[in-house]
Length: 123
Image (cartoon, rainbow, N blue to C red):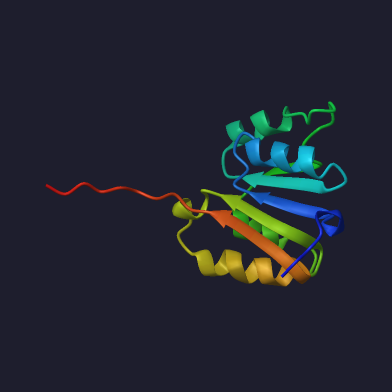
């Protein structure tokens, strides 16, 4: 699957935290409209202050909400890309998030995520 970044207009950053990932997206794809969501009011307040390298707000909007609940408020087929960086470890029911993601993504939309890994040392 090859998708040009110029075709990505609407991006959702699930579990946006302080906005580090959103800033990367805003700097690399300045025409994209980035929306963020996080459970933590404190993280949302911090991410709202984040600016791109050209001084614009990184996020068009940032909500305090559960990721699946937030996605349920988005229109069907309205998002080009959903990102989640080290978020799924905090999610009890990933099925609901993935179902809502499938509903809101445009045809050939993208989901990108990272997961934390743990090294367990056994003695």
